[in-house]
Image 1 (cartoon, rainbow, N blue to C red):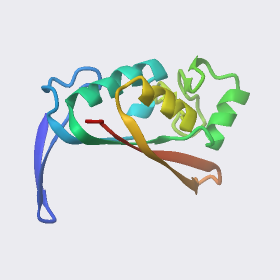
Image 2 (image 1 turned 30 degrees about the vertical axis):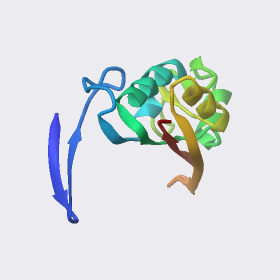
Image 3 (image 1 turned 120 degrees about the vertical axis):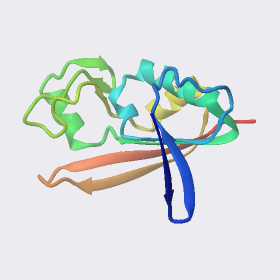
Image 4 (image 1 turned 135 degrees about the vertical axis):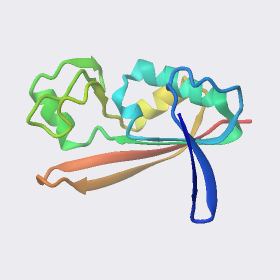
Length: 152
């Protein structure tokens, strides 16, 4: 689906597509943005998805991903509770009554995981920023803001 927005003096068309097969031609976009959606796929699926992002980005194009970090208290609780792991950073599902319960597959990354995935995907990480806050129930939450570029 597509929606054209005209706000703040900027016009943009927002589209929705599968991470694995966007349906767009090679080198079509200047930028691709992921805000907490790619955190719901495994490391293996992330390699596939970011490879597709690389394919549709123009040379020099940017990819920004905002996702849960492994330092979040929730990840430690999941490990202690014996959560079913898909891989070293991804749980099959978060059980109730924990935050984000029943959202399906959820992955928690650190810089090592990000570097591993991006090295296999054709994008070069330019920066990883850590954003931390305390949740409404007093738990530490970490997010990573990852900026990567398609090399020329």
